[in-house]
Image (tube, rainbow, N blue to C red; front, top):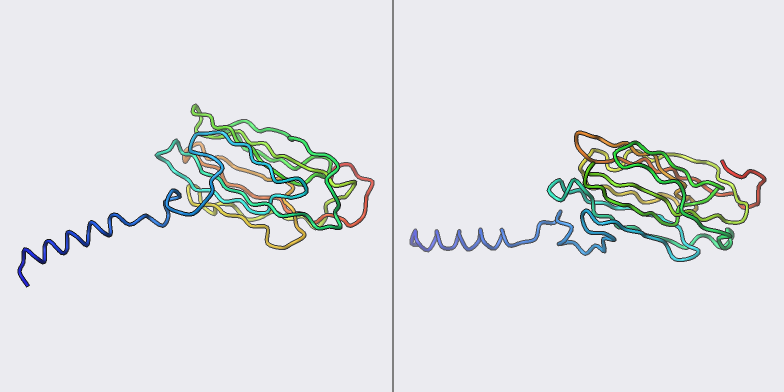
Length: 196
C-alpha cells in the first residue's frame, strides 16, 4: 500500500469521525428541550397531570445556562381532579432557594427566567391542589446534578410519589445550580391541615 494512499485513507477516516455528532451534544440527541440557552420558559403539565421527570444539560459557553426538558404523568384516579392551581413563590437569581408548594399542592409545572447579569435564572413552581389531600412519607433526592456543570436527571423513583418542591444551591464561582427535589406521597383521604 502506498504511503500517499494510507495518508489519504487516514484523513478521510478522521474527517468521518469528526463529522459524527457528539453523543453528549443536546442538539444531536432526540430531546425536546423547552428552552434555548438564555431564553425564559414556562412549562405546565396538562390538566390532571403532575411533573415526574426533569432533565437538563449545561453549557458554559452559552452563558453558563442549561437546556431543560420535563415529563408529566396523570395522577392516580383516587386523587381526583385538581381543585385549583397557581404559581407559587419565586426565587431571586444567584441566590439559594427552597420552595415547597403551599396549600399541600404538588408540582405540575415550572418556569425559569434567565438573567445575564448573574448567569442564573429565577425559578417558580406551578402547583396544583387535590381536594384536601395531605403529603406524607416525604424525602429529598440527592443532588441533581451530582456535580456542578454535569448533565442532570431526576425521575420520580416510585409511582404514587409527587414532586412537592425543591431546595437549590447556587455556586457563584461555577455559575451553576444543584437541586434536591422534595418528593412526597399524598393521603387517600381529606385532612384538616392547610400546609405541611
